[in-house]
Each structure stands twice: as C-alpha cells, then as structure tokens.
Image (cartoon, rainbow, N blue to C red; front, side):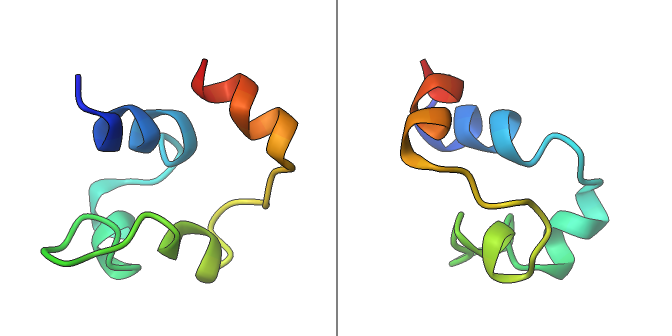
Length: 54
C-alpha cells in the first residue's frame, strides 16, 4: 500500500467518497491537507499523528 493511501485510510476513513471529492482530497491534483483545510478532521499534534502512521 502506498503512503498516500495509508494516510487516507488513517485520517480520512470517516469520509465517504463523495465527501472526499467535495474537499478535493481524491481529485486529480488534490492535496492531503485539504482534509484539515476544510475542517473535516480535527488537527492532531505531531506525536499523536506520528503514532497513527506507525
């Protein structure tokens, strides 16, 4: 599994595919941080986020 898909599964698993498209997360040229720009997920501190990806 690629890093982008792992990140999406970890931090955006609560969103439907339509919700992901609406915040440009999965559209071509979309950026992973749009999840936080659109307040679709609470921001995590560095330690917690790092532990989630481990």
